Length: 117
Image 1 (cartoon, one colour):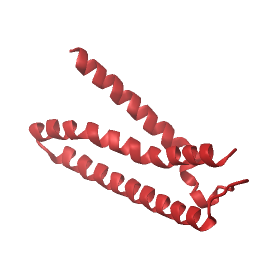
Image 2: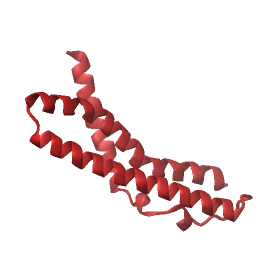
Image 3: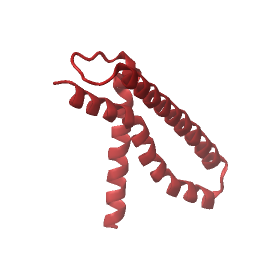
């Protein structure tokens, strides 16, 4: 009983975090938009790393939206047993989606912490 309560609380926290992460305008920035004042890194490496980060983040977001759509359709069309099974797969999906959406924000924070003096 206590474990179910903890799982519900964690699910609500994860949903709130996901909404907060998507509500920020950091997701609209690409690493090439960030101007640095002083750095010793090669600009070509920074540009290449920014392109890779943007591509991975974009692919992850697109993939997570597609998986959510497929799970939603299967949930709506499934029987009671299938709905219970989809509810079990929803929690790992939500955790993964939060990590995907938060990845660019976390990378940007780490980048600003390391590069900015």
